[in-house]
Image 1 (spheres, rainbow, N blue to C red):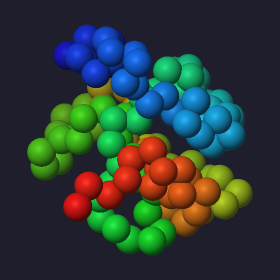
Image 2: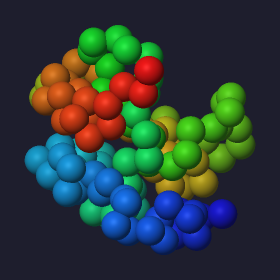
Image 3: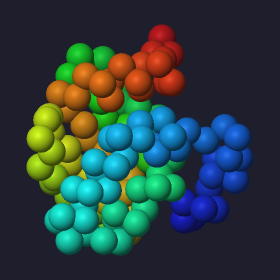
Length: 122
C-alpha cells in the first residue's frame, strides 16, 4: 500500500501535515535533501504526514513517523539518509523510496511542537 492509499491519508481533516505543523523544519528538511542530491525525497516533504511520534520519552528525542510504525525492522528496501543540519541530528528512514521516519535528536523546538500536537498517551 502506498502512502496515498493509506486510510489516514484519505482523511485529510485528521492529517497532521509536517509543512503545516512545523513549517520551518519542513523547509529545512527539504533544503537539506536538495543539497544532498535527494530530489525525489525532497519532493515528498510538502505532503509528508506525521502519523505518530517516538514514545521513548527521552528529552532529546523528536523522532516522528510519516508512515505507520513497523512491527520490528523495516526490512528489504530500507535505507538511511543522514543529513547535516546546523542544529541537532537528522536521519531519515526511507523504505521503497518513501520517507517512513524522521529521526530528530536535540531539536527542542520540534519536540515542543510534537508534545503539543501528539501528547503522551500514557
